[in-house]
Image 1: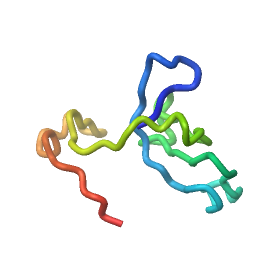
Image 2 (image 1 turned 120 degrees about the vertical axis):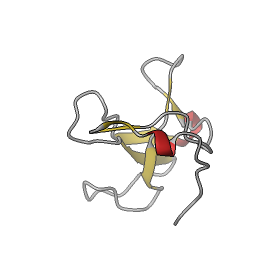
Image 3 (image 1 turned 30 degrees about the horizontal axis):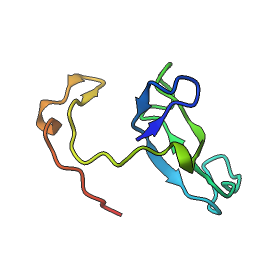
Length: 87
C-alpha cells in the first residue's frame, strides 16, 4: 500500500515488482530510496500506477482481500482470503 504522490488523501494497493538496486520490468535499475510497482492489469486504462514510488510513501502491507474482480466479474471465492508472502 502506498500514498498517491499526486493526491496524498488516496492510498493505492499495488504489487512491488522490484526493490532498490533490482531491475524493473522496463530493464532499469530501481534507484536508492524507491520501489517499482505494477498495476494489476497493465493493459486496462486507469489501472496502471506503474512506476517508481518513494519508500517514504509506503503505507503498509495488504493482509486480506476485501474485494476481488476479474474479467468475468466479482471473484467471490477470493473475498476474505488472507494474503501470504508466497515468494
